[in-house]
Structures are given as C-alpha cells and as structure tokens.
Length: 340
Image 1 (cartoon, rainbow, N blue to C red):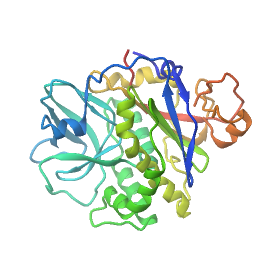
Image 2 (cartoon, rainbow, N blue to C red):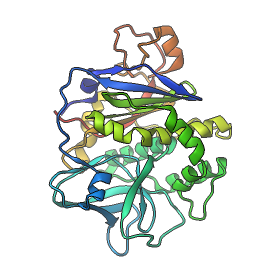
Image 3 (spheres, helix red, strand yellow):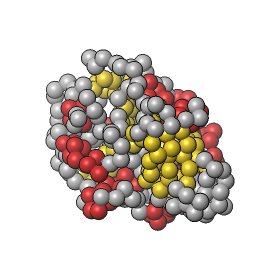
C-alpha cells in the first residue's frame, strides 16, 4: 500500500482555471502506466442490473444501507456521493470497494431529515456530491468515530443542522429538509460553474479553492474515474461558492472541523485499519482555517511565483523544489487508500 505522501510524489499541479470565486487546480499523474479498471463504478453497476443499494431491512436503519453486488468485479463507492430514494436520501460516509459477489453493509449519513417513508425500493446516485462544507465536517466526525470506537458514524444531528442552515441562507428550504432540494433550487447557477470547467486529458485529481482559500482535493487511481466524477465534484464546490458569494455565510467553510484531528500525511496509512472492503482507489483531503505545522504537505501553484502562490493558497505540495514558509492549513482527514 502506498501512503499519500508517496502518491503525491508522482503528481504535478496543472494550470489553474477560475470562474467567479471558484478556482480549480488539475492534478496530473506523471510516468505511471495506466491499467484497465478492475472495478465498476456504482452507477454503472446499477445500470447493468448487477448492483442494488437498498435499506438494511424492511424497518430500515438511518446510518446503514445494504449493497448487493452480483457482478464479477468489485464496485467503487465514493465518500460524499449522494444516494436518493428508499426511506430517505443518504450520503456515503467513506470510500468503499464493495467486494464482488457479496452483500455489504455500508455506513451512511441521512441528508433528508423530514422523510421516513419508502419513495422507491432502491437508492441511486445523483449528479452531485455532498457540498464541500458539510463533507469536511462529516469527514472529521467519521474520522473521530473510527479513532475512538472503530465505527464509521457521523454526528447525524450536526449534519441535519448544517443542511438546514445552508437551506435557510440560500432560500432553498423543502418540506423534508432535503439537501438535494438546495441543488435543485440553484440548478441554473450551479450548472454555470459546471460548464465553466473541463477535465483535462490524463487528469487524475482536482484541488478546489474558494475566494483564494484551498478547501480540499480529490484524487483517483485512474483518469477515467476522475473524468466520471469531475462534474459532480465541481457542483459540490459550486454550491459553497454560491453560499460564500451571497455574503450570508459568516462561518468559514470547514471551520466546524473537530479539534482532535491531527497528524500528517503519513497518518493515511493508519486511517483505513477499520475500513470496509479490500481497499478503495480514492483519496479526499479537506482543509480548514485553523493552522498547524504540516511540513510534508504544501500546495504551491507552480505556474506562479512562490510569493504570489502563497498569497493565493495555503496548503498541497510544491513540485518545483522551492517552497516558502507559508502558513499551512492542517489536514482534517482523508478517505481512501492507494494500492500498488
């Protein structure tokens, strides 16, 4: 298994692009031969009729769902993917490679507080991820849960409160308090962001900044997987970009992260000790306002001078060798692992 530090040694930061207050940095993997994907994406498995995601049983369980995979390949489920249907909409609490020919119980968080009735037998993924602000908080909660008791639980009440506050600020309340209703209310604006960015050939990851502050990045083992998830990720950060631009959100995105999440990139090796499945080829890193020394993890834009870059972003890795003593955001957590 590779650590994230080893993985980032193979990554170049491409030229950034910007639309309004959202900036994207493509992450490009160099000198690594591509292999055929040896797993399915969730939406493909569902479309082929080989994968079903359902309630745990007829009674249901808010923090758990059941995935039945009858395919010959494992199925990749990615942290933050929203699944709609069944008794209430959920998001995945961590990245999982669900084994082939098996049924797996997966940890989730509810993102629809006001519904507990069967809308459909199965749940299906939609065209966006959980928005970045709440994704980082939930990630922190799951990380702490794994450290303290080995479970994969979020703080469900905190998730609901975050969604309710976001809906209020963006004037997108719904009868069931659904996160998806916020995306629906702002669909036109979110799509403007989505159309403004394109996934580059060979791109395997992407880092996002809003208003000049780095918020997070996702990286995958294969460019095709990145391409498939690219627009979903853009939409998730677009919703936070709209929130920040509205001026109604006085709390910095990601500022609710727990104070106990400390460590370094090397800590990624230990994060998955209690994980499900044989390993997932994805990592999600999120950052918050509070600064801690994190010497092995810097993000300087190689297409700008070190001085100007440090003003634009705090945080990922310099690939040019010249770094400056910029204040660095701490790594709040990570999901996934890389397998060689």
